[in-house]
Amino acid sequence: MALICFKIILMVTFWSATAEIRASTKDDGEEILQRVRRQVDDRCQLADIIFVLDSSGSIGQGNYELMLNFTKSIVSEFIIGPNNVQIGVNYYGNQARLAFQLNTYDNEQDVLEAIEEIPWLDQNTNTSGGIRLMHRDMFVPESGARENAPWIGIVITDGESTFDKDLTIPEADVARSKGITLFAIGIGGATSQDELIGIASKPSDQFVFNAQSFEALSAIKQGVVTSACGVAAECKASGDLVIILDSSGSVGPLNFDNMKQFVLTMIREATIDEGGTRIGLMVYSSNARVMWHLNTHSTRADMEAALMTEELRYENIPDGGSDDFSKTIEEGRLTRLSGVKIFVIAVTNWVNEVEIKEIASDPDTQNTFFVTDFEQLSSIYQPLKRAVCDGMVSSQWSFMGSYLYIYYK
Ligand SMILES: *[C@@H]1O[C@H](CO)[C@@H](O)[C@H](O)[C@H]1NC(C)=O
Ligand SMILES: *[C@@H]1O[C@H](CO)[C@@H](O)[C@H](O)[C@H]1NC(C)=O
Image 1 (tube, protein in one colour):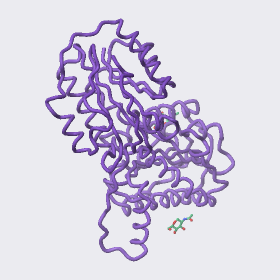
Image 2: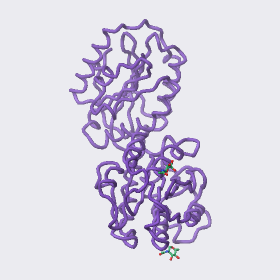
Image 3: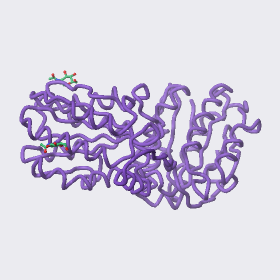
Image 4: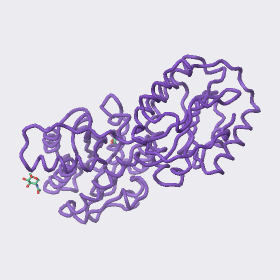
């Protein structure tokens, strides 16, 4: 494999949300002004946001209402709808309960009314239950979670967990590993800072918020919204991506088509037109072949057409044999030294994690993705996207480009 055989490095924009201007109907002046303001701030156009609300006894009825009002005020900062921001809510006492899913309501008014109806349970603080319900039953396609939208969870609590306390942070770890960005909002003096930090995404100063009291919640609203918009915008970061597809003997034409579908999703999600993302494509078996360079296609339509052409079909070239792997590792290492980030998707039942992790950039846990068959590729799309976006936002990779290496054994 010739991973380092070409060096074309350009700046790009990655996976940005497509701005969609919604037609306004009969709104009053204030409402229209607000809409215009939100649309100008196009960073908040697309996101799936789930609130995980504390409904424990310590809060009290009045403060509970303040918390619901705070939740409503955040919702009002976004354009709500199936093509914009979707909202889901659950609340937890002894157990977690669903209020509504991301796809239950398609407009702001219905969401606001539904939040008002959420009852105060006046029970224990089972925070892990709320977090689990969120990532297991709510951030899933059946509940309306969209693969192309940033996933944001906002956990609000007035105190440390009292039920299943040991599970709170591990459950948040699982949620984050699924590509969910987690905010932790603590209210009052009874919260545990360690727990909030353990729940939230990093850096903590961006994702952990403390309000002295329920009355003080309004003071942190803007911070939460700004941070959430930042998450929604992350994918507008600059970077280059070269996708490398395995076309060796064991893949077969059907699996090769599944890989192409996966690449198609990525192309459709990326902003390619107007000098946006550049994506290069290579195919390898015993040798590597450049299908197109980073600067070959400048529009999404061209790139989609190139992907679907007869040119790019599975070629049954015999497998290279195992000594290719040590070469691959060596080349991966050299490529990393030259400043390129490498993500590896391994489609395999035969797991030699050592080799795969050797190829990928560190930290391995963030840059390697394992699935057992090609049909599962879509399940890793969200965490992959997050990893690629994060890498491009936070580091020098944006200047150097990235490789996504799809590998089968
Ligand atoms: C919550 O908002 C509603 C409607 O804006 C308001 O009537 C109510 O007083 C607020 N609740 C509290 C506790 O401030
Ligand atoms: C906490 O909530 C979860 C989800 O509702 C539930 O499965 C679990 O049993 C609860 N924990 C306790 C101690 O009741």
